[in-house]
Length: 255
Image 1 (cartoon, rainbow, N blue to C red):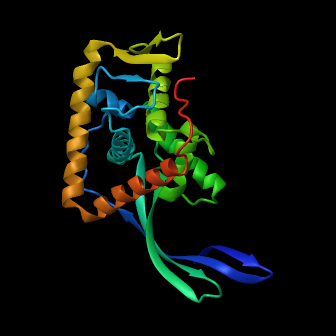
Image 2 (cartoon, rainbow, N blue to C red):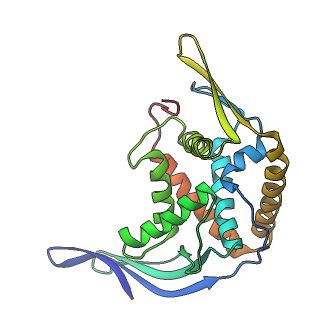
Image 3 (cartoon, rainbow, N blue to C red):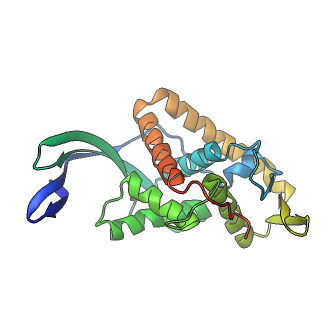
């Protein structure tokens, strides 16, 4: 089935076909994790950061990879979304150059009820938005692009886009829940700013335990299921593309 094409003066310069689709079933565990979008807090409960462009002890890109991958895995666990593997062909310049490919798409299940976790809700909204904007195409490429556009803007440029995404995500939670807040301390007439995430101590053990259980499942799947490994690597590849096209310029995390 032809799903897209590009013509110039009536001549096909690009065609894309989809041959098959297969709904994937992973060996997941029904261990729902609340507030998975706060994965960084599970790793660093007393997170501190600043607004200067110096090296950081935090691996922002790695944390972002895991935050999004774990959020998607949690949605799969709770059967709110499912993954489809599709195979197809791309043809260029009068079908002279042909390439077979495979990719993944995300679908929201019809039985979905309102998601409470903020980042997970944004992922679901990105899937639904992709269905409308891209004519029901919900490839990982489109979903990740729309998700990151929401946090970083379509054409924003940042020194550390992964950090920007994660901090804006934290701010969303702090505006919604009274048990998490971000404290700002200005120094050097406001040029230098320190930030500390504060949350009610009673939430830390629950967040750490749930996030640890989900991360263990994520690691197990990546080590034992080659299909899931390729799927999660595809997510990370698309995240990296979106981050790369926003580098570098000024880091405006803290305006």
